[in-house]
Length: 126
Image (cartoon, rainbow, N blue to C red; front, side, top):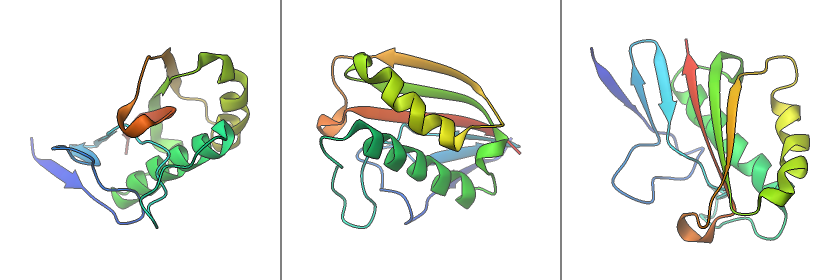
């Protein structure tokens, strides 16, 4: 099987030795996306809904670079440092996955890279 690295300037670059995503056959696996604005490289602060939106926009941009859309997503994993904001995250998440509802896990974690508050990764089949 051929593995293809996926990279786009419409999402923040990796903050370590990994790819934004890997395409393996007809599947795309994104790396976790923090709420980093790709235009200035800065984390969005103090608003979990804006942070969720940015993380999802980053996932969406990476998927598009690989030839997929959010409709192709079969699994999403969300990591949050404050699980009490779960309902606020769901409000934004529902705007991106309203009709199509992929499987999902949401995990409360102690810390995320760069002081992030939410990180989202996805698996898509095209």
